[in-house]
Picture (cartoon, rainbow, N blue to C red):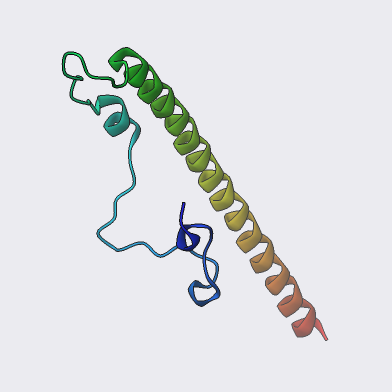
Length: 100
């Protein structure tokens, strides 16, 4: 890992720069990724181990995406509730001002 990948610099405002053409990996992309087999007499990775790992990564990524979607739904629900509360408070304040 080089120094640039250690963390975001102050000029990025705490965010990692990504090109607009960058697309994150999806679970199915990880699951379907295949590696060429090693040649005879050569050392390399056991394909079964690699595929088992990729399946595990895909399952974990699917869980993260599901948790993120749930978090976004919860955030939207809370924001809608806050907007309703703010609207109710503004109406009540306006009604109190008109009663005077």
